[in-house]
Amino acid sequence: MNLLDEAVSHLKEAIRQRPDYTEAHSNLGRSMVNWGNFDEAIAQLNVAIALNPRFAAARNNLGISSLMCKRNDEAAREFKEALNIDPNYSTARSNLGNLYSGLGKTRRSSH
Image (cartoon, rainbow, N blue to C red; front, side, top):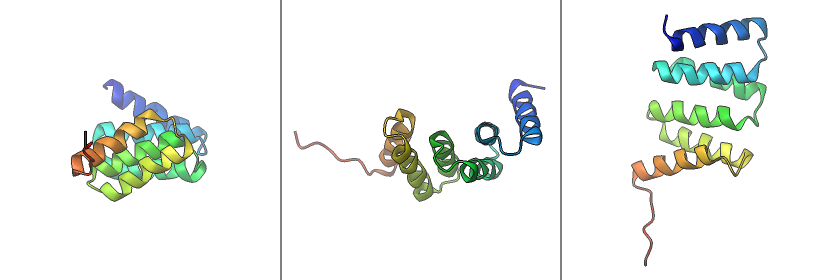
């Protein structure tokens, strides 16, 4: 068993013991992204957000999962929501910037 498998096992056990454990759902979702299981990632992250709609990290992770599924509008919405919750969340800001850059939605300065 590799470390990611072990992490998933522990997170699932934490959720079994405490189904309302928001952080465990979010972390399991992030682990599923690392595994490449984006549907399961999105499902776990949606549970985390249902438990705590103001959990910026779960919103950011859902944005990453959506991006990996080529759901760019959903990804942008989640990154923006993470920033609405925490305007100083630099990871979400960077992810949104990278998304827009990749889509060619950057502005060039007129200097």
